[in-house]
Image 1 (spheres, rainbow, N blue to C red):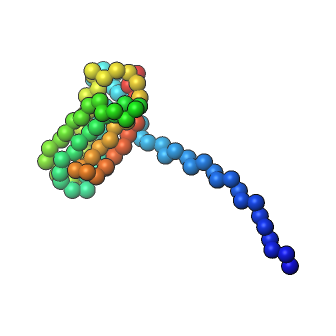
Image 2: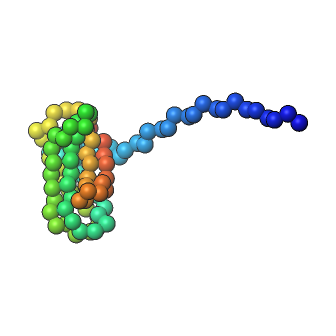
Image 3: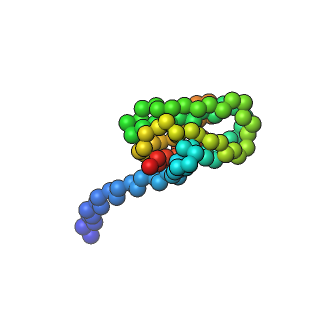
Length: 101
């Protein structure tokens, strides 16, 4: 029997993972960020613009492990789309898309 040959299928595009979206409250100018910490430590919330430049950082010190809901002030931030990265030390524990209209 002759060897079977097949044409390789073109690779399918990898779908972008949808990040959870947070919308800025029009009255307070804040977002409420829910996150889970595996242990106690220092949580850093880093707001990045579309070019991944740091716009603002808020740090919560000495937080025990568990689930938390913290405010993040966006009052003085221009309308647009942003990325919010949550870090516990050097470990990323959350990433969100943020929309301010």
